[in-house]
Every structure is written in C-alpha cells, then in structure tokens.
Length: 210
Image 1 (cartoon, rainbow, N blue to C red):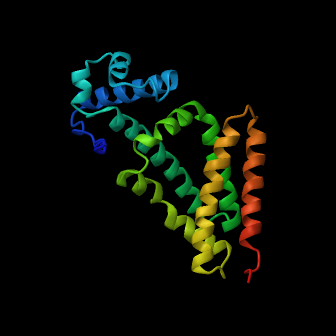
Image 2: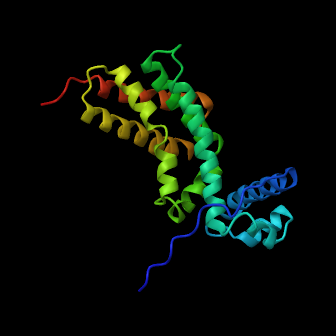
C-alpha cells in the first residue's frame, strides 16, 4: 500500500494585521477547548471553527489541516516551557545542582497545571512527533542542559554527559507525566520533583564505572 503523505505542519500564512492576529488567537483558543473536551480523536477543523465562531474557510486561510493546528499548540507549549527551563538553567545565582532541581520542580508544576491539555496533546503526538519541526523544537534547549551537567560534574566524559542529558529529559518527561495524572498537592509535586533531581545528581556524581 502506498504511504500516506505526511501532513503539512506549516501555517498557510502568518497574520499581518491586528484583525487577522485576533482571528488566529481565537482559533487557537478554540482549539484548546475542543482538544480538552473531545480529545485528539474528536478534534476536527469543523469543531474548532464552530467553537471559534468563524467559518471553516477562514480557518483554512491560516491552517491547512488539523495537524497544523495541533502542532502550533504543541510548539507554543514547547516554546513556553523551553523559555522557563532555559531561564532556570541560565540563572547563575544558583549553583548547578540547585538549577537542576529547580528546573525539575518547575517542569513538574507545569505538567500538573496543564494536565488536561498535555494529555490531549500527548494523544495527538503521533500526528507530528517525527516531523523535522518537532525534532528541532524538542532539541533546542539541549546544549544549555549539557553545559549545566558539565558544570555539576566537571570531570564527566562526553559520552556520559550525552547519556546524562537523555536521562534527565526522560526522567523529567516520563515521571512528570505520571505525577501529573494523580491528584497531588503542590508540596507533594515539589517533593517528587526534588527526589527525582536528587537521584539524578547522585547518579551524576558516581565514580566512572569500569
């Protein structure tokens, strides 16, 4: 069977005027509501347009398909989270270990605060997760994290540093997701995040195994 062509994720055009900017914002806000209400399986451009109070034709002026809308929501979420983490990674008022703890706590908090949208976006991820745009967005902050890990463990080898970067991101995303799915207090969320960060730091400081 012929492969289904990959969906176009880029917008048709970017808004240039205040009116068109408001239209795109209305579409994106409506998309969030539809995604939270109906999940990825029930997410359609028709439902988004209805919720936004615009015609499907107006929506298609900016977004070629539902995948492009979902990717825009995910990209906006990645951007906001990336800026938050980059700010913590770059905060030299804290030592490297405390920055790694603070970033883990901040991420866990955002996971819990936005759990319904995150879950829905997670369900929609197969639509775009292997795209070049998705990979570029996910990998943007990794050099900062690698530098911070080198600061926390100055004698780490490049190979162990690369593994540590992947380990930190995996712990953050996988356990953050799990913690967000339970009804926990902010103090409990912080306790989980700090414990995971401390486990990571303990691993980082282990002598090199032969």
